[in-house]
Amino acid sequence: MKPNNNTNKGVDYWTKRISELEMPALCSTVQTLEKLAKDDVSSLALLGRSVMHDNALTSRILRVANSAIYHKGSTQISTVSRAAIVLGFDAVRNICITAQLLSSLLESKNLAPAVYQRLIKLMAKAFQAAMLARMMLSDYDEDIQEEAFIASLLYHIGESAFWSIGGEFTETLDSQLTECENPVEERSVIREALGTSFSQLTQSIARHWGLGELLIQAVNYPDDQRPEIRSIFLADKLCEILSQEVIDKTELDKRISQAANFTGLDEKELTLRMQRCTKATHKLAEAYGAKVLIDYLPDPKRINKLEPSAPAVELPVFEANLNVQLAKLRELTAFAINKADFNQIMQTVLEGILEGVGVDRCGVLLLSPSRKQLQPRIMLGRDAEEMKQLFIIDLGDKKGLFSLAMEHKECQWIDNPNAKKWLEQCKELKTQLPESGFLMAPLLVDSKVIGFYYADRGPSERTFSEVDFQAFIHFSQLANVCFTVSLK
Image: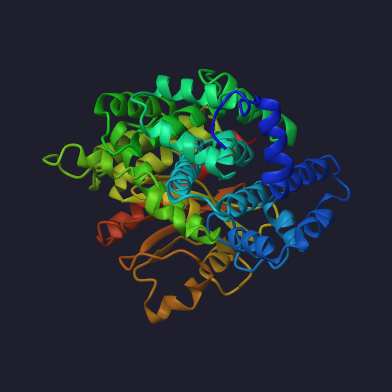
């Protein structure tokens, strides 16, 4: 079948064909999940039963749900309905959609090699863009991050679904597109062949399947300045540039600058976070059973390779600085006298610890409502974003380090977590602890522990001194006074 007037069917034809003939499983899964979301009473149990018949899909969902990116505890999640209770319905809904999408597209049968490679590249770019969009929204609520992730992943669902059809028609169009000299010519060829654009097909599928208003608006109004849509747009543009064989440095610099401005980060730190995000994307692709995507993921490391003579981008190593300590302690003292915002206090004390005490990274870990887990609220410094995703502490073991520190309200200097005296207490941590040790202190409000301050020098492998520990304690104690005042 070749593109001609008889195959120029328009958006309704392609939407119906993809939904009913080519990808019915994904269409059915999405529509079922949409119905469940409207039924708060029975949604959790029905969610598990709705995918139970598909063992491969269930296995894939549980692998992702138990991955460090999603799972906040140490107990394995063994059912889809349990995953919905632990992670929340929206998170598991998106995991289900992602798993079914990857399954439907990766298992597309009888595709010509050129068409299959085009599909894989498109999926890899979408997968990396989804992770970048989530990363750029790290200061926003998790539900916003999840919504942007799935909308970014499905941003090109019309094009992906079309290539998964296979057959002579897709092969002919693929051949025609390889001969096009620019995007404008490509769009013209696509419209002539399909009777619609891939963008219109994405919007039609999104409406027909109930994929959410954010996806439709992101495709229809890409210049919208709302954070969710802005992150989707920038992530898509960055991955598009980085997936090209020859990078347009002018365009890349423009998008990096826009993304840095959007996130409030300097360009060097943004670049580092993008590079770390790639590692997380690799791990998530493996959890979804989509290793085939890894070799095609747009690589943010190429940003540095554009200037071979330039040194690798690294965040600074902070040495102890008494002037910074004094300045930040004065700020905290002012907060203790005049009430300040909770987040303002948190940011100030962490900046004092990072730049004043001179650590590589530090953060605030807050107790969950059940008081059974500690989860990062904010992390600053090197590898901070990766630590924020992986630093999960389960307090089920009453002999664990943080459990004991919470009970006794003690500050601790762990000089080597692998040493025999600490090893047993440190088992509750899921992440790799630096051998150079770390510092921790309880975050108290009216003498009640609501979390912990944490600091280490892991990346630079430097050790702490007694002076460092005392300065860390000074910051944490003064911040506790500020928090108590602010919440009264």
